[in-house]
Length: 64
Image 1: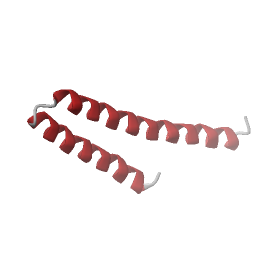
Image 2: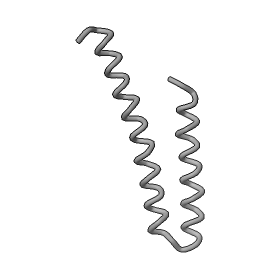
Image 3: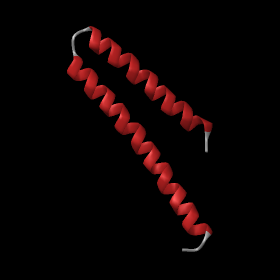
Image 4: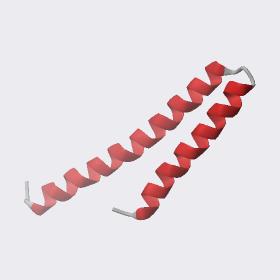
């Protein structure tokens, strides 16, 4: 597992948190919720990609 992936996820989390706070303070709660949801989807897609690579590696290792 690469350390840069952890930094990417942390960076996305920090960016989403800051944008959410700014949008909430300006009265745009709906956009803040959409920003949070978009950040969550991006991170979940990254994790799903890693899980897919894990299954591919296990399948090739055991020749399934």
